[in-house]
Each structure stands twice: as C-alpha cells, then as structure tokens.
Length: 116
Image 1 (cartoon, rainbow, N blue to C red):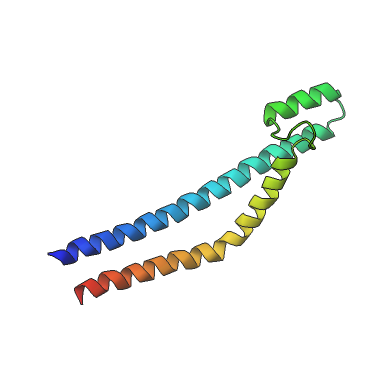
Image 2 (cartoon, rainbow, N blue to C red):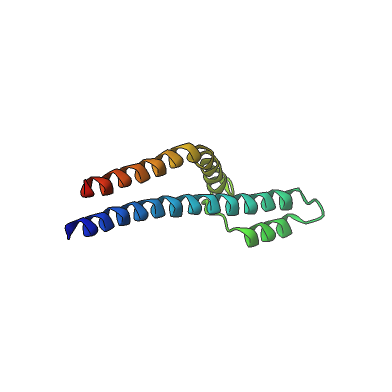
C-alpha cells in the first residue's frame, strides 16, 4: 500500500522540480528578449536625427521608463541587466539539461527502489 504513495510523491517531486526549472528558464529568456527589444528600439530612436532632443526623450520614455536616478547615465541599469541576462541565457543550456537529467534519473532510481 505504501509503494504507490511513495512512488507518486517521488514523481510529483520530480515534476515540481522540473517545472520550476522550466518556469525559471522561460522567465529568463522572455525577460532577455523583451529587454533587448526595448533597448534596441531606444538605440534606434537615439539615432533618428529627424527628431528633436525632447521628442527623442519622450519616445524613449514611452518605450521604457529609465530606472536610473538623475545622477546616473540614462538606462544604465537596463543595459547592465541586459548584459547579465545575455550571459545567463548563454550559460544556461548545459547546466539546465544536466540538472533535468539528474532529476529524472534520481526519480527513476527512487521510484524503482520502493518496489525492489
């Protein structure tokens, strides 16, 4: 009677762990894509010489409101965040794949050991 319950709990633990890994990776990729899109648009706006300085500022702020204070360079924090996300996205693939494989194998071994 205990074997099915222990097996279900073991599998549920694996599913939750893999779900958390997938959820976190998806949020990371989505945030990187969105921030890159916005900062590329800001770069395009800054290069548009047909706009006045005030028009460029207004359009930039319509894309993303800068989080930097008045003493910082505008969008400094956003650019730093983008570079951090690029590094994280680039380095995520193999560690995430190995983690997922480890969870699957350990879950299989744990569930199997309950029945043996």
